[in-house]
Amino acid sequence: MKTLNINTFKMKIKMLFLTVLFASACAQSDKKSTVNNNVGVEKTVTKPSIDIHTAVISGNIEAVKQHIKAGTNINQKEAMSGSTPLMSATTFNKPQIAKLLIDSDADLSVKNNDGSNVLHTAAFFGRIEIVQMLIDAKADKSLRNNFGATPRETVMANFEEVKPFYEMLVQQLEPMGFTLDMEELKKARPVIAMMLQ
Image (cartoon, rainbow, N blue to C red; front, top):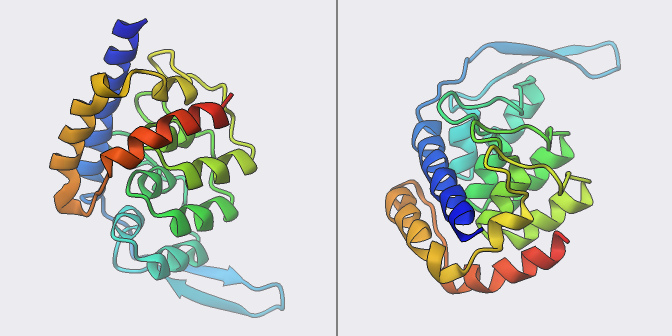
């Protein structure tokens, strides 16, 4: 079981790193969308110049709101790893943006290229607040990724065994604004495991 968990974490980290690395490279069309406000008057909403994934990673909630109003597909997967804007908000610990996307009916069951959904991501990164939002929104706790792990199983391995993977992620993603407090993560993992029972 330890080998399965370690291999699962290795693949998860590789895919997550590729997701984040290429998320900022994704371009978003600047097409205008027509929005009907149910009063018989239509107004045109222009998509922001920043793509939705970059807006999420940079914490630009106003641009995310504008994308939603303009009709941007909020379940749009970035090309390299298949992460959605909600997965990016979770990875980069942007709970306000995550809530906005959840409240805007983001699909919680979308899987990235390694078969993980947003609940896997939230659990893996110890995002207790976002895990609770997802549970409240009825995210499926039983979904398994391509390695056979449920979101709960992503936090069941011994922390000291997986800590080097987290440290590598921090080193690689810190230039993009990624932060991860190892002590908080260590405390959060068992709490999340209990939440996901």
